[in-house]
Length: 309
Ligand SMILES: [Fe+2]
Image 1 (cartoon, helix red, strand yellow):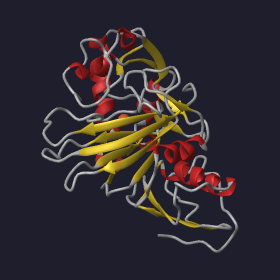
Image 2: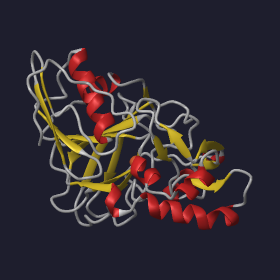
Image 3: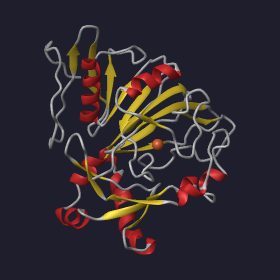
Image 4: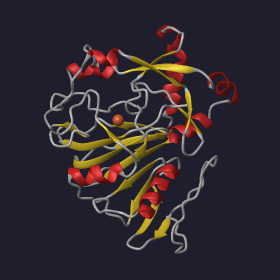
């Protein structure tokens, strides 16, 4: 943990920097926030804030900068109503409803990610992925609230895609820069997709809409930090533009495996009331399926993002 002097706020640009960290401490009128990194590659726990409360612009700017600096931030011991989760998330952008998972009746922007103790299916989010890249404008980020977390297992892994890009050879970077790839939701959410037989306690609605395809750059420039991040994922990316799936498979497979190398990752152990807020523009995540016999229920809100460039 690093502390800084009691400057009123420190929101610094991290453009182009790799391993340095800022905003480790802030004294504002009502809060003393601290960011404590949980791994070398990305991820920090934020303490000193109840996200159920209303916050001034300064505090929200600090949290936003912490998100940009650490790519994924965590808050422990929160107690959130759906309205409070929505109010906090709204401070970072418009919220969106999931195309294939029905939201809560009174709060359609919140989806319930649940697996009961007696289910043994693949869990929702149980593969390395970026959320909703089947959309033209994939989510900026998600705010996931651990409502009922298993006593054992159920951790979430995250992988830093700035590092994944930075660690490719210059030859590979030269080849990939400017390439685009096709993304579709047909794997998880198409009529023949995995959702047909999984997630029976979730409100998943497979549809023909999942067969639609969109194109995204293989490397995107983060709109706020200006840094380049690898932007392909095993759940939604099916081929490179103007290539067949067969032709694309070897290189995509290499990139999928490279993107989640251990040294790019962090691992979050859920505790009751914990919240994870990740930057979906530069992070992959993976919900581990190792809690058979235990119940896990999370509430997720997605914040609208921009078109990857
Ligand atoms: Fe996800």
